[in-house]
Image (cartoon, rainbow, N blue to C red; front, side):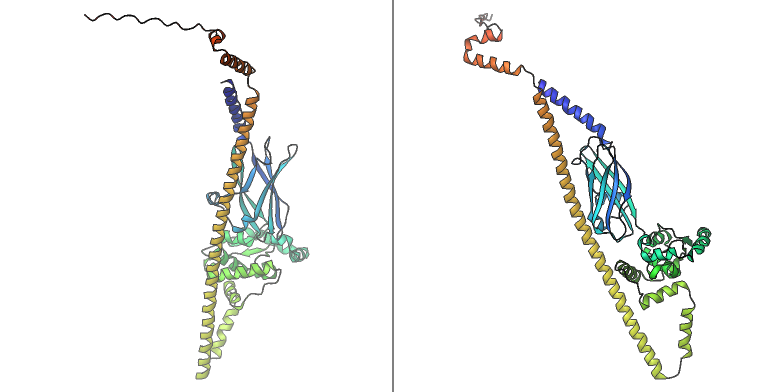
Amino acid sequence: MVQVRKLVLAIAAASALSSGMAHALGLGELTLKSTLDQPLVAEIELLDVKELTAAEVVPSLASPEDFAKAGVDRQAFLNDLSFTPVLNPSGKSVLRVTSSKPLSEPMVKFLVQVMWPNGRLLRDYSVLLDPSKFSPQTAEAAAQPAPTPAVTAAVPGATEPGQYTTTPRDTLWEIAAKARNGGSVQQTMLAIQALNPDAFIGGNINRLKTGQVLRLPDQAQSTNLPQHKAIAEVAAQNTAWRQGRRYVPKTGAGQQQLDATNRPRGDGTAVQPARDNLSLVSAESGKAGGKGAAGDAKALNNKLAMTQENLDTTRRDNEELKSRMTDLQSQLDKLQRLIELKNNQLARLQAEGAADAPAGAPATAAISAELAADPAAAPAASGCRPHLRLPPRPRRPQP
C-alpha cells in the first residue's frame, strides 16, 4: 500500500510539473538565411524551452484543417519544408526550417505546429523574397544616377487615388490582390503591367522596379483580358523568369495589353481598312477568309488554354490529396512517438517507486516461511489467542 501511495504521489508530482511546463514553450521571430531561387534556410527562435529535450519537441507543418481555420492557403510546395529543433540549454534554442528544393515563389506563408508531451502550439509565418533584390539587372538599374530624381518626385504621388508607389518589399501579386477591382489577381496583374510597361525590367511581372508610381486599373481594364488567357500569360512569364530568359509576349497577348493602356495606336490600325476598302469582290472574299482563319485559331487557342487550366486544377487536386495522406501519416507517427514518451515516463516513475519500497518487506516474508514450516506455532507467532468452540445451547420446547 505504501508503495502504491508513493507511486501515486510521484505521478501526481510529475503531472504538476508537466502542467506547469505545458504553457512554457513559445515561438519567436523568424530569421531568413537564404535568398530567392535557393533552398530555404530559416531559423525560428524557441522560447522557454527549459528542461525539454530535442526528442520531446516535435515540430511539423500544420494540418490542412489548421490552415483552413487560420485562413492560410496550404500550397503544395510547402510539403517540402522540414523542421528540426536545435536546443541549447546554455544559449539560444531555434527551430531550423529548410527545404530540399529551391524556392521560386517570392512570397511564402506557412503555419508551424510544435507538439511536446504536455502541449501544442501553432503560429503562422510569412517569408518575403523580393526578386528585385537578387537580380543583377535590377542592381545595375538601381546604380544608374538617372532614375534617382524620378523616384524622389514620385513619392508624393503615392497618396493620390488610383496610384501606388512601389517599395523594395513589394511584389506585383500582393499589389494586384489589394487593388483588384472586379477581376482576378492574374487579370489585375496583367492590367497593371499594361498600364505601366516601364515599371518592369525585361517586360516580366516578376521583375518590378522599386520607387515606381503605378497606375492602378479600373474595373473595365481589370477584366479586359479573359481569365483563361490571363492564367496562361502569367504562367508563361513565370516560366521565362525562372529560366532566366527575356520574356517575349505573343501577338494576341500584346494586343490585349495595348487595349488596356488606351494608346492611340489601335485607332490608326482601325482606319487603314476603311482606306483600303475597294469594291473588288476578290479582295473582300480574301479578307473574309482571313478573318475566318483568325477566328478559328483564336477558338483553338481558347480551348487549349481551358484544357491546360483544367489539367492544372486536376494536378493541384491530386497534390492536395497526396498532401493530406502524408499529413495523416505524419500525425499518426507523432502520436505514436508521444505514446512512447508517456510510457517511458511511467516506467521511470514505477522504477523509482520500486526503489523506495520499505525495508520491512523481507522480515514479513521470513515470518510467512516459518509459519508454513510449523503450523502449531501459528497462534504464538501471530500473537493471537486460539478460538474456543462452545457447545450449542439447547432450544426451549415450544408451548
